[in-house]
Image (spheres, rainbow, N blue to C red):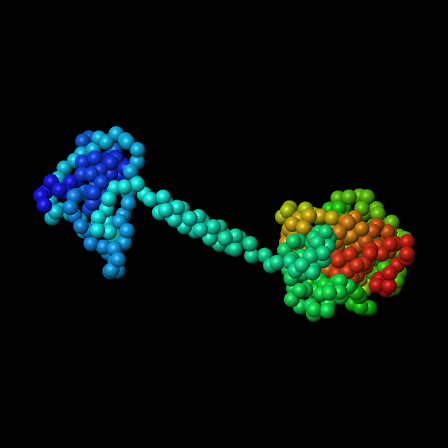
Length: 422
């Protein structure tokens, strides 16, 4: 064998180099080595271009990397259509050959078109891999538990009540897991168990109470337009007229003259002393004048939950009043995210419980459960209309659960006061 049997070719692409090999050495040539090289730059500012270098020879037998007795099929190379082949050709000795890039398998590598069956096999394998990756992505992105078929109607009812979808799904999946087989076949039993599950989600706070001879100070706070003044009038009327509590009122809502006059009218009707204050000093004086009362209710001005200055002023005012309870009044007609944000912003004033108002102004009450899941405060009262003193009731977990699930109706004021107000 002579040195002329081994040659090196350089070209811009591997296709051009292989075409040159075939033209000079024929289709029986064996590829011995390939590598990427950078062209020499004649001027410093020139950008170096990469080339492909292919070493090939005739009459060489390349040992297989496999120890199997049967020789694996020879490596096939696909030749591109005719292209310009401005390549460099030279000869090298066998000692210059690199052993790192000996082509895998086969006694010789021939330059022939890739067989159709090999192309089809590779295509099928790639398609299978793509399908598997797509399945893995689907498995990772969809981890939601499957809705049980027998509880699907119940699931849609929860969604219709404006309950969050993840919470609705969680409830029906838990119901499927905990219920007995005979319960799952009976819709009424399923609903009864669901009431218990939803009931456990609610935390009903204590109603406002008083102890004779021990004054208790309770404040209502919240954003504008949620019904604080009407709510405090309902509370005052029930506590004074039904429970006979010795009490007084303090209002700091001097931004709205109409609200002050409205509360003053209620106070005169039920014969309650009322003080109007604007500063912490006036607040202390008013409470001193009401020191012989068993209960004092404070009606505060509506504050923007995003106004840190207003929230800070409210905090100072309540600190001077030395309040025992702070009830945050919220309207269930508001957006859930807004409600949660309001609770978070008012937390700095020491809120101890929630009063949910305007239940009569929304068609579905799932927002109550959504809110209970998002905040860690008990609910003390619900208001169900504008009538004073009737449209208010102490919060009860079972009652709220049944309202959310549509199994209870709001009590109409025309039917008279409810027993729960006693």
